[in-house]
Image (cartoon, rainbow, N blue to C red):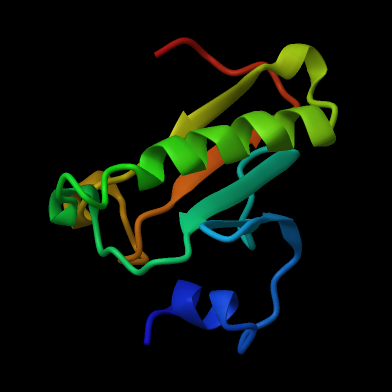
Length: 110
């Protein structure tokens, strides 16, 4: 079982920021910004490359979670960055789709 699946099952502690029936969000243990959380689907999917038409709706759930978190956490101007690493060469280290949500500091343009 992957690390994130263990967090979903509450077998490993995490500081949970947001949860609904499809998505869980928690603080990153190695933050790169003052506000750095991970948003994950509760269903295990290794990478974006493993999605199919049926599972693709999870991204809408993750995006809505980000919007709801920005409101609940009073993120300044609702300004934040969402990042998804797909595959080892892109920097993915946990193979359970996840989105980094970073805020509370000025970020460079990409």
